[in-house]
Length: 173
Image (tube, rainbow, N blue to C red):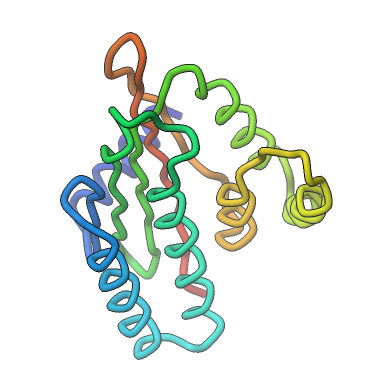
């Protein structure tokens, strides 16, 4: 699994088409990023493909800027990259977070990855109806839209923080 993860990471680094780094961007730049991506995809693809790509990107950029889990010290260390290679879009989200949240996030991603597409749809409905859940919709929606497992790795930064690297991909049909 580690070899596959590093292969995907290298593939993304060599084929970047869009990138946003939270440390060096503000809300206006985020909106410009999303608008530019949307307009470009709308020109290139059918409505279904365009909508799927847009949802995938918007969900992950929202998660990038969502600060529930972070303290002030880490909330800006995050980036999102989109790459394309051989008619497949690859998405890399990197986000620094507190180590105390790792087990919960691993559990959520592993739960989503353990489901087939029907199971993911059922999980989505279940989470929607449970007002007390803290489960992150980003992971559910990412699996549902890409129809592929989410690859992730936590890279230790120091004793209190780690970098979440989350890779997903969407082959054009």
